[in-house]
Image (tube, rainbow, N blue to C red; front, side, top):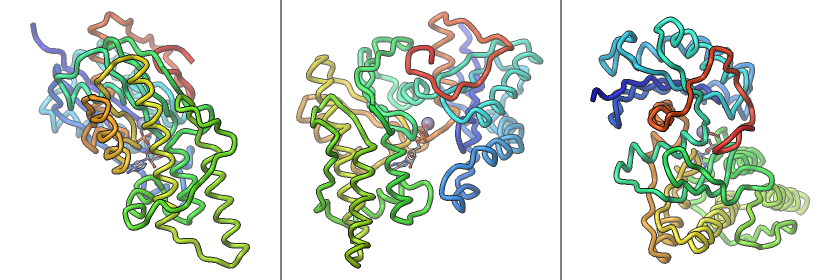
Length: 339
Ligand code: KG4
Ligand code: ZN
């Protein structure tokens, strides 16, 4: 049987991306990042993101097709991220995908962004077997998900407030570091020691519980107190200490899920899975618990359309219905189900 040619489109935040997938072979994955544009504002400005997606979307799709050596008339289906994310940004990808789907007469699949992050692992680890656990660590989502089949997701734990990436970005901002803060903290943490204990009074120290808002506040309070005392905080130590607490909370939660479920295959998903300490700690703890741990390559950790095409492929194989032309963008979307 001929393998399907799928175009993936991703515009949920500040990356405009298009990718072409044939079966499990990635033919192209073009990513146009707006990071430089948003850096001067210290974070993503939704209106500016939408406008930049508008100018980038068609050239990015054309480039993905050219690099793949594929004509659009050869495509069998399109997958597009419709949530979660910035609605104005998502709408640019959704509108382009609808127009292409209608004009080419091919089906369109509405992809959940976080499910796509998890699905990136099928591309980089084709031998991955179900069931497995996914440690979800992105700018908008944090938790541990059980995956029993390509279309069977069950969230076992989620953050009760902020996402881990959001905490990295907010802490970085209070330290005066540029956007996006995660990679900056990762870099600086390597030069410091985790000597400061950031206590989150609201968190009840249960390994199954995730919460990042109190940790972020603990760092901000520490910085204010240092300032009041006229002391200059050691930024590298603050980064190392925050990163250690943030990462270990998630890794503990993942290991608790390993023990509870008896599942010994663990993958990582989302932008924060690019973090060097998360990669080190999850690998080490996983080994202790007899798990095999897999991380997607960096290019598939942060936002990209390859993961969207993979997710669409699995939706098609699972008989999930194609989207209609009234598909809308949604800002909030649960894993494995409706908002
Ligand atoms: O998955 P992603 O690209 O977008 C969302 O779906 O949210 O994740 C973006 C997040 C940002 O918060 C960014 O700071 C964080 O991933 N991030 C990192 C690293 N690289 C990206 N956080 C910590 N360490 C990194 N190396
Ligand atoms: Zn993402």
